[in-house]
Length: 145
Image (cartoon, rainbow, N blue to C red; front, side, top):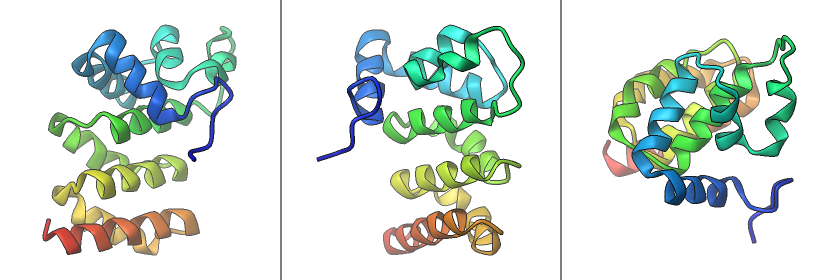
């Protein structure tokens, strides 16, 4: 059974509920906006849930890379090919958690355009990123993507 989050549903269930409530295209658009630097509090809360409340308190935060992680997690469970280029860019993000989640998106949705960048991540200094890149490459290769 999948692990429940602090708001009582898995991230997948939360994203699926957002898609049912607002539409798949709207959720993809919101994910892409967050990846592009949007810091809209309603947008952050809709994708990340109550755990993101600290980021919408009006204070300055240095760890807003989480917005990009949450955006990618949204794309993990609600994919659209228009996200291909932004996901490929995220594979070179300065934050390792963003690179890791981008590799997971590549693996799940077989984003063949990302093969070269994912291959480069096999040399990432962070073990979790290297592992996610390895899994993505195995899936891409097996699928002939």
